[in-house]
Length: 122
Image (cartoon, rainbow, N blue to C red; front, side, top):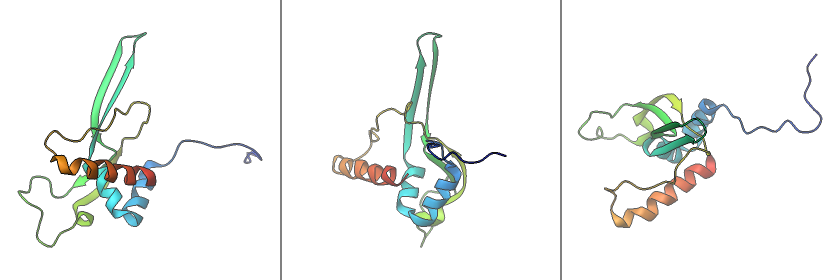
C-alpha cells in the first residue's frame, strides 16, 4: 500500500483550474487582473535550435464582453468572465511584464501594482 512520506513531498505543482476558481470566488479583483492582462512567454533551446514564443493571460476564461462596443449596463468584472479554459503559468519562460504601449503614463504604476497584488495571491 502507498502512503505519504514522513518527511519531504513538497511540490511546486498545483491544480491551476482549482486555483483560478478559488481566486474567482475569494479574490475577484485579482482574478480579473489575471484574465485581462496578457503576458509574453519565450523558450529557447540553443542546443537544438528550438524556439517558442507565445502570449496570453495567465487565466484564460471565456470573455462574455468580447465583441461588444462597451460593457453592458450595470455590469461588473465578476459577470464578465465565463468558464476557465486555460492556465498559462511558467515562471521560467515568462518575459518581464511590460505595460501596453497605449497605457497612459499615469497608469503605469497602477499596472505594476495590480499585477503584483494578483501574483502575490496566485
